Length: 103
Image (tube, rainbow, N blue to C red; front, side, top):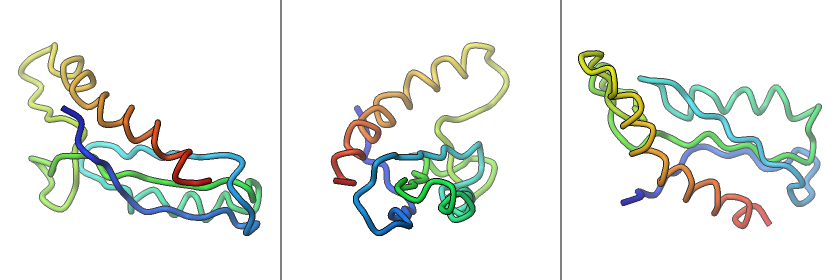
């Protein structure tokens, strides 16, 4: 079942309605706060873009202040595939809703 994702956002630098959406997805043990600064760096070249960096849905097992899209034990060669498929519905739900939010 999908879980609601959220994270830091930046509105378009132009002050107009968003014409593009840039979504940053962090890696294992990080969170959206680690990437949203990229949006600040890109605002001048994409002034009509909204930026968002959602936090992964789970606390990271190896980095207590970080997040994970799915667990990694490296004991099972199929765990990444299962993890991507488990995280997919939440990310799909987020990506479907975000453009509507930016209107």
